[in-house]
Image (cartoon, rainbow, N blue to C red; front, side, top):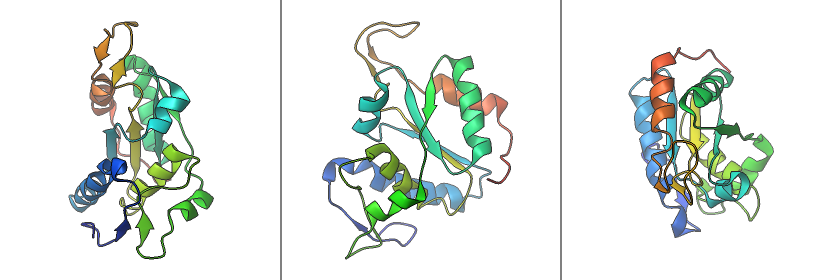
Length: 168
């Protein structure tokens, strides 16, 4: 059982990070924050979609997503928005729990985002998926080959320019 009281059927133990993240999201909401922005190497599907130089973003609030998108060029850490279509939420339905920790074989990044969205209680939220950008296979721009710390500059820029988000 998660901190938020939801039960999760674990179908893939390689998707364990989202089980920790869901509790962290609940804790952030409980703290009464204006918005939640999380960052993680959430899905290999994001790596397959965007490669190693662009992070995927998704969320439930246009204002906070737009702020992340505006901070990205200033930080020279590119992002690309993924949708969270509600009809794909059904891929997380479970017969024995409130939801499964993974969806089907398709839309892995999106269903992972829909999983996380279950734990923000409607609070403005954005997720930055750095699965592809965490390691650089070769030097590019200012980033040397190897671990990149991608998202550090982005989060700093976002913090410096942050405005409490408007509702959806």
